[in-house]
Image (cartoon, one colour):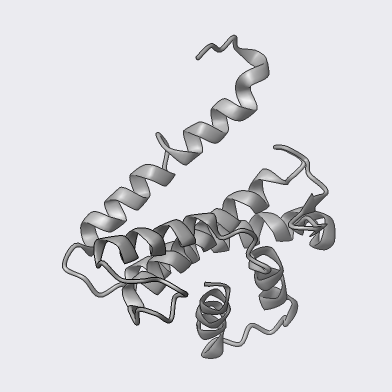
Length: 166
């Protein structure tokens, strides 16, 4: 899965050579190493179960659509971590055993790279070739959007201002 991420990000920068080489470096720093890859592994496991296929690794089943979906999920997750680590949110100095992106490259770069990763996740999703792609993008947007992930982060950061109970 991590190899897929590396290749997918590398492909996005092949045809476009930004004048500042640090730009791509920051994307890769924020994304790699990819951590536990829980979400992607779960996706591949469900795919293996639904297709009744023994999964040993992502190369067991050659499916570009599932590689793209898996990468989009991980890229999106990385965007949330970059933003979450920033001083205005959780103010974390370390992520995945190294300096957080804003500590290594500065806040404005981390903010922009996080925004870039968010948009890159949708760009990757848009490359899926399937008749249900529109429904997938709606599901992804709803789950990650204003009443999903974003609202969860809002609640997490707002917890000191409100009494909450289960």
